[in-house]
Length: 391
Ligand code: 3PG
Image 1 (tube, helix red, strand yellow):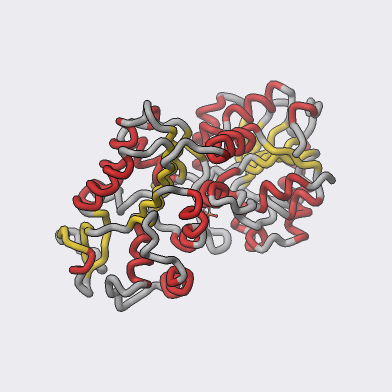
Image 2: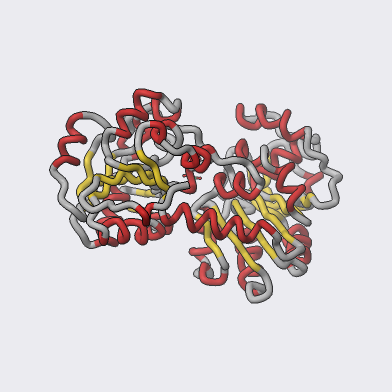
C-alpha cells in the first residue's frame, strides 16, 4: 500500500472516503465517535495545504431520502474542526465539481450521502468514475465500510491515485498486532442486529477464539435454526440465515450460547417482560436480552481471558429493561482491563459503553463493526485489497 506521507499534497483536491455512518435523531448526531476519529486525518490534510472533500454513506436509504441526509453530520464536524467547511447537497456532477473548483487550501467540503445513488452499492463503473473526477488523489479512511464491495470503496481506486488514510492505517495496525499472536485465552463476543454479515464469520471466529460468546439476534437466529426455540414468523433475513446457521456445530465446546433470556412480546408491548430459560420461550415472545444465568456464565469465562474482542450488544440495550446483559458485560470487561487487551467495535457497542462512560477502560475502540469482525476472522476486506493495486 502507498503512504500518504510520501506524497506532496499541497494545493491538491483530496477526496476522502470516510465512514460517518452515525446515529442521528431529529437532525442531531447522537454519537460523534466516528466523526472525532476522523479529525487526525483532517488535521494532517489541512496542515499539508490540501483541499479536503469528504464522502460517506449514512444508513440504508432507498433513493434520495432526506431523512438520511449527511447535513447533520457536516454540522457536527464543523463544530469540531472550527474551519471553513461547506455542505453540498449532492454527491457527483457538474455542480459539485464547480463547488470543488472554487475551494482554497485547507477548505473542507462534505458531500451528500453516497447511497442516494443506487449505483454506489452496485459498484457501478460510471459512478466510480464520476466520484474519481472529484479529486486529484483519493484517500480511503472508511475502515468501517471496507467490507463492502461498493463504488466508493472498490471501483473508484481504478481511476484515481489511492492511499490509505491515517485512521485506516491505525485500525489495520492495532487489529493485526492483536491477532498475530494474541495472549490467550482469546474470548470473542458477538451480538447485535446485523445478523447476515455476522453469522457468516462465526466459523472462522470459532477457529481463532478459545471461546465465542453469542448474544443478540445472532444468538437468536442460531437457536431458532436448531429448533431450540420456535418462532413462527421469521423475517426474510432470518429465513435466509437458517441455512448458514445450520452448518454451525452447536456442540462445539468453544461456542457459548445463552441459556436464559429476558423475553418480551414479538409485537413489543412495552409493559411485558419476563426472565426464563431458552427452552421456555413462548410463541408470542422473542428474546431481547441475555438472562442472569447467561450473564454469570459469560462473566466466568471472561474472567479467564487475556484478550477480548467484542462486537454487538447482547440485547436491545436502548430499552432499560433489556439493557442489563450488555451493561454487565461491559462493566466486567472495564474492571478487568488492566490484565487483558480489549478491543471493542461497532456503532451500537461503542454507544453502549459510552453511555456507561467507560470507553477509557478499553484498549482499542474500533470504528468498524462488520468490517472489524471480517478482519478479525481473516477475511480479505475488498476496500483494503483495492488499495494494494498500484495504479
Ligand atoms: C457500519 O456501521 O458497520 C458501517 O458504516 C457499514 O454500514 P453498512 O452495514 O450499512 O454497510
